[in-house]
Length: 513
Image 1 (cartoon, rainbow, N blue to C red):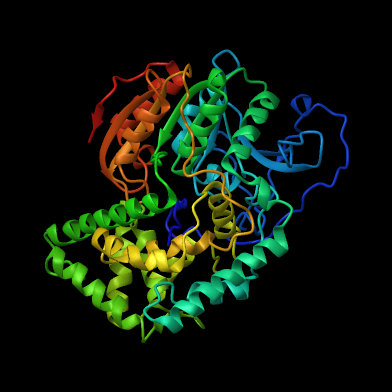
Image 2: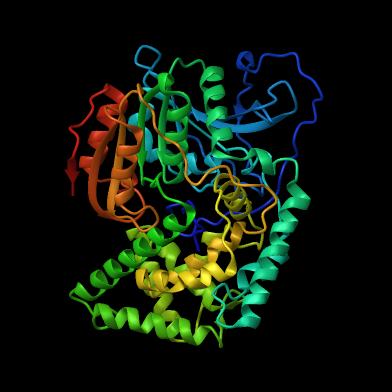
């Protein structure tokens, strides 16, 4: 289940991720100017375990190869002459020739914790129009994948961690859950002590400005999705004069604390579940998981209650627990394209088979079919905990349960208890919420989706207001799922492409449906 800030779901059916890490470079001193470093681009290797494993990216439709390189960045931006770490990059060169090339378009697909090096080629064809004038570039942010990825538990320990009851009902279950959380956090500190203080979003934003310079661009042209909108907003705050053409899609509300964000997600996922139930029962053929929207939701609630004490067979030898089922349902709500998997998974679970819901949960957690985990979840927790100042006690969470349950009977407890993820974290959080005010920045196109479960629609307006007058330009998509551009809605894509390719800013308040 997403932690207090939205975790990226790779929007292809059951794309499963996996886990390994590289270490920091231990240079004691450095004479080189990192802005003048030369990148050594080569054909991309297969993704590392930390990035999710699998095969090297296939050639682009025109036969060009994806290219990868590593950029050096300061481990500690407050000590820029000290140790460095490596930031893994990927690019596809512009297809339209040098005469039409604008520069690089840098993508961050969210998380925090998602590997851009693996995600960009998975969706490369979706951005073919943008490639006509840009080199498409993405990266593993610091702490993620090949970029000195955070490492916590091993695969077997993670299996056990995700099998546990994450919505404790009594004192014994609460003690077990809190002890497991402490042990996980202690493992992160033990295995990743050197990098944990340096994975804040402000650090990643500074990496992006170094990246801009190393790539040879006067301005940072940027496409941020989900958490990538927060990263983009922080970049705009720190470097307003170098913001180029920028798009924020699936927008994080930058004004919220982690508690407020989790409560907003509870409402967002409940709204998406309501929309799924309405859609299923409105079709001419029978909905196999319920006769009415309320019946669909009631049956799901009964299933989860039963799983709390009697799990189903899942992916052998693991069982589908209440936690795994809730997590799998949430994963399926990230995209309307996944709704058919949710129907299939629920239908199977009602017949005693938990495999599909468990595969969906594995996808959310970054577990591959071979049992190996990416570092998606460790990086997600590390970045959130380094960013977010509030630390919530178990007693405080218990007091807030009624509000979370009112927001979502299904997801409320999960998201409330996720607030203790940072309680025993080794590194203090930086702020209550990010500062994204960016006076003087170029226009930023801010795209909100009314049916978004993970980054509720209301966050788009809050981002526009927080960026400041004359910067944020809001566009609304009346759709379903997490994000808008990859829905392939022509109105959204025309507006986004028009700005990125031709500099045409759509009218504020434009609505696409």
